[in-house]
Image (cartoon, rainbow, N blue to C red; front, side, top):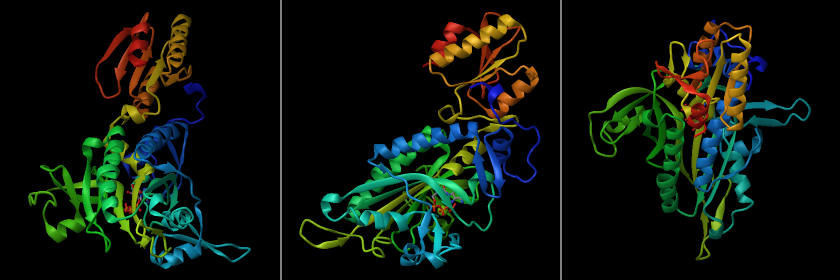
Length: 414
Ligand code: ATP
Ligand code: MG
């Protein structure tokens, strides 16, 4: 993509109404635009990052058997009354139609839709297990939105639901497949080494639920790490038991963290209100046992930026960067400009994603500053000094090197 054609621009000044690093950088670099508190538009660069994250998540969910669907945001009041959450869920957006005076909810989560849905298809043990997910926008009337993309009023979530014939099957899937798929997602998104499987309170249905907490000073949660087991417990659990649930270690390290995902053994919490049952092999009617698994996409993007940035801008992990390469032409000379054009074309032919700063009205200093702010993994420079070669530098490295066009294409098309 040519930067001269990109309708968005970067901004030098820090937005006054954002105090989090992630929102400041994402707005300044032109990834998102703030519509109002807790609501953002994804701009072309931001949408590219979003789609990369979405694809990583989708691939990992499909790999554990997930079938993708898309449920609506507009939801009937009756379903929410059945689970007691019309009144019970503080952050549910509720409103009334002007015409019919019918009440609706805006989807804050989708158990109220997916359970009645599966009731139309799940009858027998032969229909189980079933794994269903979606990647969709959620609405929550959060009391306070803060920390930019980390807590919004409208945000995207991947929500995955599993349906089982008994708790043993749920347990197996939850720990062997669900947990593993989450670890894969966070590893591929670049935050694997700072994300911890964290024991959280399970409410009345199971002893624990589990959060995936990413260490960051921007986080609103506090976790307690067992460095031996590489797991953590959250605040509720530390106050109950004061030790690592795996090894009993009491010497836990306190850290600030962001909850990027969580998984929950719902068991019969939603199958009972909707009477979701199946007939077992022995003919007996039994409750379907459920699990649910969420990842916040906006929050994950925000957490990545909180971890990977420096004073000049974002440093995207390669797998989620909007482009692999940011090609800068700094020369006004026709020959050099043509050379940069040729590199741009050759990279495209080799299917290397490239943002080409072909602007004639920006100074070299501006181009360098914007490249650092946007944070694409490889920066290539063609200038009056690079001759028949191209300068290549990684965003997170201080040193650059000169390479020939041929070597460049070979190196980058890998
Ligand atoms: P939190 O504890 O942060 O309020 P939650 O436990 O209510 O979140 P879930 O309902 O389980 O979260 O949602 C699954 C995931 O969705 C969370 O792990 C988080 O990544 C994301 N998420 C939840 N609320 C928000 C929000 N307001 N803005 C952005 N992402 C969110
Ligand atoms: Mg939570």
